[in-house]
Length: 281
Image (cartoon, rainbow, N blue to C red; front, side, top):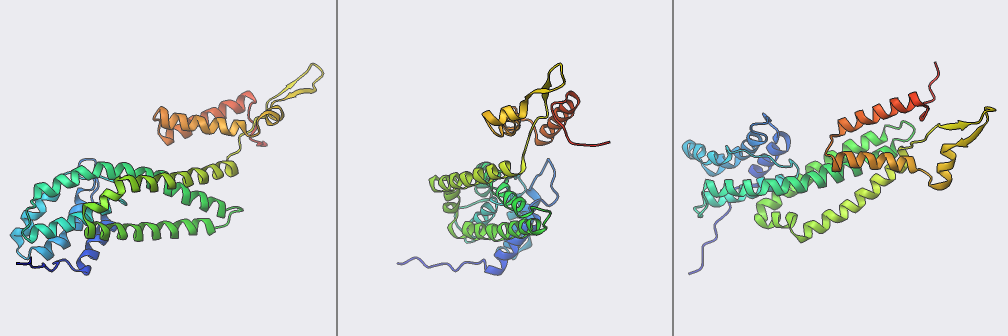
């Protein structure tokens, strides 16, 4: 006897409402103790209300989502979609309980966070900012408008795509993100990101020295910047960039402390005559 096909109990309206709650409220009541726990619970409320008409069943089902949760909010959308699919299967009588759902969430939030933080925060956002900076030459507001529109569009439609793919394909959607295909996509995006950041560096960062050595007659016999340009143009810019990379990547110093270090180096350099800010008093 053929298996009877069970009609899905979740409609597009319910799924969209769940997605919107995650998109707008993933960081609801955010704290170091709970992180995204309450945002996750809020996104699952429409799902549970649809699947469990009885209030007591809703209370029992939501216990699976009270555990700590924290991941990249953008790519983490796929986990919420997978959860919706699993919750639907549980309500349909499949051998899935709250512990199984919570184990899935706990197992995925770490890998998704690592991928999302490097892909979104470390690659996509710098690419968009690099393009926006290039469009802002001369004080044009077009760059700022571009970044706002592009980021909102990518964030919304990208997360929506991931949510519904997670619901439709379940753990197969996650396998793409953490598998070989996902790794190839991340590598390609990383290469593009490096090119954009390199272009921004060459266009917007310019470190030069004003240090000059004079003889007894007061004439300059060594202009350090001219000598460096004849050997390796832009070498000071590269050196400062590599210093920042070393501080943040190897020494794990935050961006704020790195900027403070640069301020101190600039201040000392001006006092010693190594740098000339061109200020007149």
